[in-house]
Length: 204
Ligand SMILES: Nc1ncnc2c1ncn2[C@@H]1O[C@H](COP(=O)(O)OP(=O)(O)OP(=O)(O)O)[C@@H](O)[C@H]1O
Image (cartoon, rainbow, N blue to C red; front, side, top):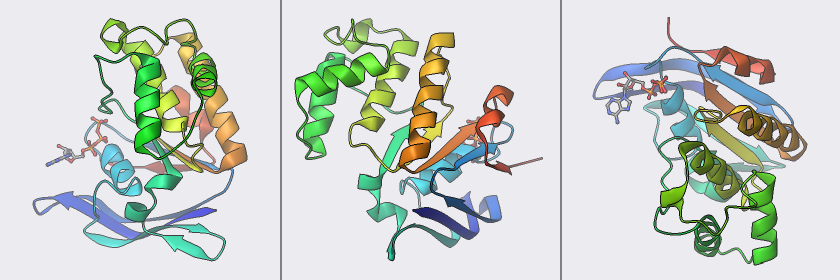
């Protein structure tokens, strides 16, 4: 599996944010996208997730001899971002059940509870999200992203609001993802540069 980005450009209303960006990411590798606020990290991740269309260039995932446009690759992608909204009136477990159903997955409650334990929410799966702290909600986003065991993991500000234990969970998830496929991290936290097999610096 590979991710190919060729001469990518993107912007908003005639303002160019990303210009002529190119790289290839191979299975097992981690790409870290760094840069100051407003340099286009989230924009790049949204394009890789198929949530935004670039103004120029080419982006595709390659598996064997098949190519997928990001917009047709949602089943391949797990996505964690601060603006990823989950249902506050549902419990953690109910959120996972709901999104598994939406994705057409059959996953037992036992497996969902294992996933909750994996992200450190084992004791809190039946609490409503309204009662979660921001770090607990961020942990649940990881469980959500991992539901379908995606070969591509896109992490925007992966450890924002997480404590040390939460950051250790993220470290474990990234290590596991190296066995499964690709990881892309957008961050301006210098501690996260250590994950990079490939580093793309945006802005200044
Ligand atoms: N929907 C939008 N409409 C117009 N401009 C936008 C939109 N989204 C982002 N921008 C602009 O594009 C630029 C890049 O934003 P982006 O969120 O990709 O940067 P970032 O590097 O992720 O920033 P941060 O570190 O603050 O999260 C910024 O100048 C931002 O104001």
